[in-house]
Length: 39
Image 1 (cartoon, one colour):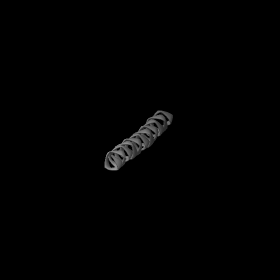
Image 2 (cartoon, helix red, strand yellow; image 1 turned 90 degrees about the vertical axis):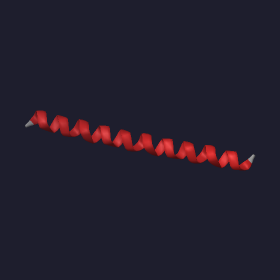
Image 3 (cartoon, one colour; image 1 turned 180 degrees about the vertical axis):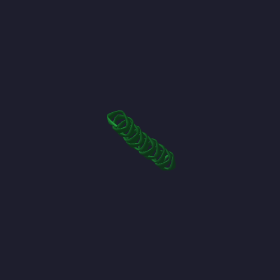
Image 4 (cartoon, rainbow, N blue to C red; image 1 turned 45 degrees about the vertical axis):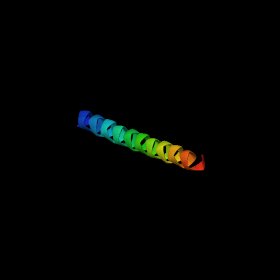
């Protein structure tokens, strides 16, 4: 049971990190395209 809890916690952490990474990529892409419009 403890093993399953550890797997579940690891999956949740992985999903959380993945979501933050995607958010970071989206913001970076948006910021880059915004800067291109300024030129």
